[in-house]
Amino acid sequence: VYELSTIEQVPGIEAEIKGDRVSVTRGEAEAEGVLWETDSASIVVAGQAPRVQAELTAKRIDDSARSKAIFGLLPKAAEKDGRRRYRLSGPLSSVQVAGLK
Image (cartoon, rainbow, N blue to C red; front, side):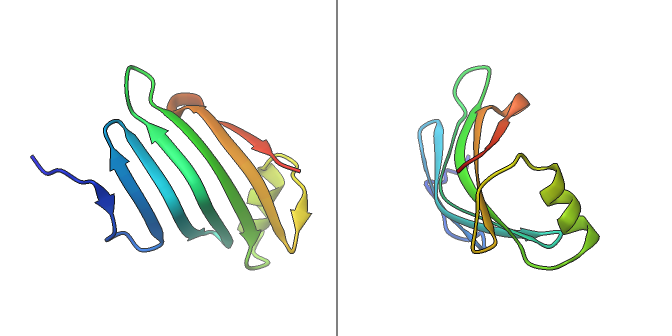
């Protein structure tokens, strides 16, 4: 059995594992022309329905058709300096995404 208490080897993410909770204190990922960032996310894996709570920032970093499509499918959110903020919440099986103002 391998015990993990911090996530340090994954590029772009800083997180800690305590009991049944994964807490992300910094995360960054780039996919399909969109940069996603967070400094507050948690996943609780206790019980039958693991849950997520996170605030993310999304920024288009290119003019590709894919990045335009992704932004077009996301809920409306206030935009500042090309960045939009979103809140993810709920059970992992049906996460709700809400645009923030």
